[in-house]
Length: 351
Image (tube, rainbow, N blue to C red; front, top):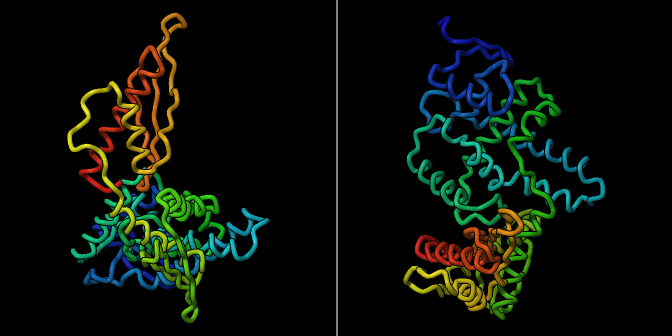
């Protein structure tokens, strides 16, 4: 028994499972926090499908409440000019299932969980693969619904820290804030996906209509495009209900976006810039945006390296060209790379 560390918290005296010592050490390093009772962290990493020990459910119950309060305190202090409605919206966004699930994926938390649930493993992998393909953290635009287990893990770990530090909310926030970054802001919320949907419908000449009604305490939002229902969502927060509905509508629209790149791979750089412009015009995307990234060499033998940015419904993509003696030639090189990238995207996923 001496090989197992023993700890006391709330009259709880239990050894740490030898198989979890590595997981505890890794998460302590991630959090920058040493547990007085690591068994709390082990509990937070135990799913109900694990046959022998108590699961994280009690800790998750505490973590749900304490994260909400910690985020509330932070938002109140960080946004002195925001009204309660906007503060509530930001709080909901920062502790939503999808936000916390993304935190779990970003830090690889699921790998430490004790479980016996192959079906759950597959759902988590599908979700992780979908968001790992995204260029940045973008709330509310995931293609795959976030498995609740991932959010539960984050809440359970938060509760483990909170209990271990004698229910010190300030200490919990100091330990946990870095794990939650980036914090969702109003600017983040307003950027995607509602703006994307409005811009898409405007460019495509489609009629967009978002309707709302109440069902008990829930707000229900439905998105209609040209009179056809494409998405719906519900939440106690009206704005979140709209975001969920818009997310669903965007996925429906993505499936119908025309694929207008030729089947054969682009092989010639000459004329690539013109072809990329034509592609964007045909799909009603914004015009490609070119910029000089680097200027190389002496003044008498200067070379330029340019990039191009293309905004599609599926995201913003950037590619760089070779260094050339003329800006125009480097832009053409960047366009050539972008055309081939979009061609690969056509066969590998929606754009």
